[in-house]
Each structure stands twice: as C-alpha cells, then as structure tokens.
Amino acid sequence: MLGKVEICGVNTTKLPTLTAAETDALLHRAKDGDAAAREKLVEGNLRLVLSVIQRFSGRGENADDLFQVGCVGLLKAIDNFDTSQNVRFSTYGVPMIIGEIRRYLRDNSSIRVSRSMRDTAYRVLQAREKLQREQQREPTVEQIARELGIRHEEVVFAMDAVCDPVSLFEPIYSDGGDAVCVMDQVRDTKNTDEDWLEQIALKEAMARLSERERQILALRYSDGKTQMEVSSEIGISQAQVSRLEKNAIKSIKKNM
Image (tube, rainbow, N blue to C red; front, side):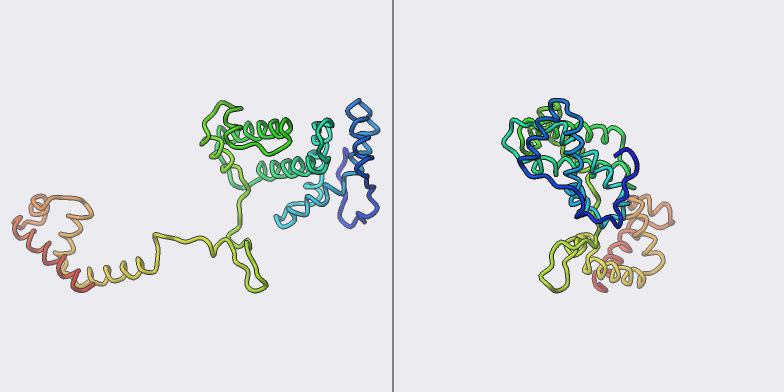
C-alpha cells in the first residue's frame, strides 16, 4: 500500500473477497486496534476500489493514480465507519471512495478558482462528510449551511465552483440511435438566427446611407451626443441635424 500499485494487466479475480459477516467481524476487530484485521479489510475491499475507479475511466487520468487515491478513501471509510449502525460497509465506503477521487480530480483540475472559494468548498466537504457519518445519509444544503454558520447561497456557490467540468460532447441520453449530448441541450438566446439576419439587414441598410447620415447616427447613438453638439461638430444647424437623422432612420426602417 505504500508503493505504487500496479493494476494494469492484473487479473482482478485473484483479489480476495469478504462476506458481509467477515467484513463486520473485521471491522469490530479493527476498531479495537487490530492492525492485521484492518489490513485484511483493505485487501478484501480492493475490488470495491477497482469498481469505483471504472466510473472515472473516461477522464484521461492514470488508473494507477486513481486506484491509490481510491485506497485512501477506503482507509478513511474503514477508520470512520460506525459499526453500531445497521448499514453495510459498501454502502458507506463507496461514497467515501468517490469523494476522495473527486477531491483529487478537483485539486488537479485545469479550471482554477479563488483560494477563498476553494477554502469554503473544503469546509463544506468536511461538514458534509461529518454530517454523513452522523446521520448515515446525505445531508441537505440547509444542514451544511447551519453546521458552518454561513448562508445557503455560499454553500451552493462553493460546491459549484469546484464541481467536475462536463464536456459539451458528453452523451446524456441514447435510445439506440444518435446520442443526445450536453451541447444539444444548450441554447444561445442572444446569437440566434433571427438576430444574425437582423444584424446583416441593418448593416446593409446602413451602407445605403450617405456618409453624413452615417456620421450623424454614429455621433448621436454611439457617442451619445445631443443634436446641438453634433451640429457644432460637423458645422450645420441643429434643424438640419434633426432632419438628416429622421430621414436616415426612416430609410433604415424602409430598407430593413
């Protein structure tokens, strides 16, 4: 367990397995300080770690690294498991292993967040694990917020900041045909086909205006100047500016 674990090409059927009764007996002995029982528990649950890391096989991470991180989660699960609760060890151990692997992936992610936000996220994770051990179930956001004495929104923002990124091409549904990906569910409400056509039409309508009309519209609606300021800048009367502006707008509406 101290060195690098070679799992590539290993026949996993040779790994030892434990029955529920054997696991319970070893857990009680391990809680009493029996190091040999703890070691047998680790060896007997390596298949559990292997089954968990299969969920993360598509991320391009080294399987040996994930296996070792998963083993850390397994050790934490063994040390923190409450034998007085009527819960199977695997039910408690799998979330612990997954959490350890996800924490490793977050720490090695290419997406960076602020230190304060990451610190808050770690406090949230620690409170979540603590409440999970005490309640033997997943705590709510409100319970975590009360435990830490922070607002509900801070918990949500912190967890969102360190959550695993999702590829736009990750399939989310398939009925045997073409898979539906995340990208298919994302819609840009700003740059729609209608907006593109409207921008093209506006550009073409502007091109039909005279140079002075385009200059007046630019000064009025881009620079935000008044008609008096425009008249002073281009050397014509305010009435002429008003007339040219109205004619330009009328021409644009007609051409669009």
